[in-house]
Length: 74
Image 1 (tube, rainbow, N blue to C red):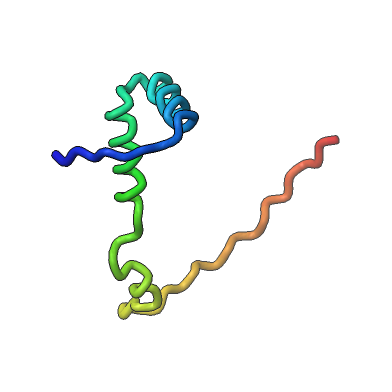
Image 2 (image 1 turned 90 degrees about the horizontal axis):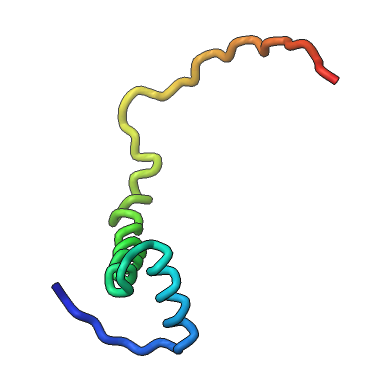
């Protein structure tokens, strides 16, 4: 597993420590989870190129039923 080293302002470090404490995680584990979510929550490669690429039968929306009439409450 890679180990990273970086510098951040003291005020930010304190906020990170507080958030890690609230999450019941070590600072290292908290930052690893944060980085993982940030990097892995991206759209898959070529995701948006698939829009409009449907090649099956045309999709049709079924007829909508009548709207139910309900009593009015004041």
